Image 1 (cartoon, rainbow, N blue to C red):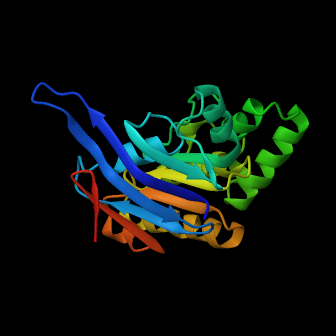
Image 2: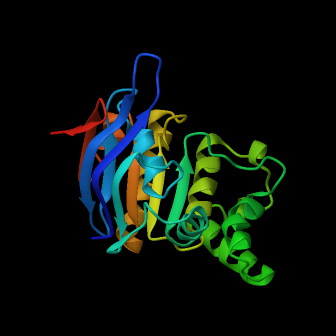
Length: 222
């Protein structure tokens, strides 16, 4: 077991009463799982992803990482856990437009205060791994959408996380590029035993899951 949720509840106030974005959600994720989280809009998928490492706080419930409870820890500790254990991939790529490809990939290493030469070396190795060794000095606007998402993937794994959290990583890509990115995530999952938790609307993307969670109105349904 790498990550477990026990009776997770997240409520938001509304003029008509409280809304249960997550309603007693429980799950167990093992190391090396490729988890797909599906469901209609508003079902709680992104809320769940944000809650796992404390980007939003739960109303109630428990989150356990490697047998240790983390939902009730201080914000600074959750920040350190995110830097150590988690990588994030977003639909919008979230690259800094005025930084080069390699500078974008080096960001997690800079946050960990890795020495500059080591930052560059590790970022260059990861860019070679994702097939972008010849694009290291390009700005994001000089890259295709698929290349930008591969830069985002490289940034998410350069600090050697145990878990990748991906929120609609193929949402801005056409079907051919979507399959390319999904195949690459599968390669990372299988070769590096990195656990992936991916929110998606796409039936194609959902098919890559070795474990599937389907949410509806904040609840996990079969």
